[in-house]
Image (cartoon, rainbow, N blue to C red):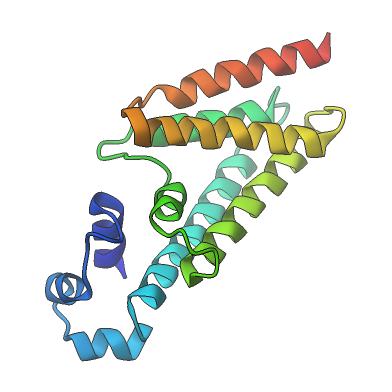
Length: 178
């Protein structure tokens, strides 16, 4: 799974065959197929593992914020800014995979949809914790900023896009609070 995750993220799901995953993982193709049935199953399992890891990491990050954090919403943008600065970052793995997998019934697309719904719900909860009116609107709008910043990384390579998204969110929050 780790090898497949690295390869899919670095080069794309479509560009990587199961032969290469099996070879680099040091396992046979029949072993891979016995575990995941097919490449679609492998892609879904890789993204599910990423989802679980990402959700735990984000939750732990937010739980570790100091008491009295002025904005948990902006703190989440800070978390993503740190991710964008890492070497080898090439955008949100869920957004990248969704762009490669147009079939909404693909098993990996179900995982992607679930992760994006979780993130939107988290943003709604953070907006409510920040005392914002209409938290559901904020959750959806902030999700657009995050998805837009991630898309800009994919389309232009701009790794500062999340900083721009954070500035936009901060300006919107300031207007809301006036």
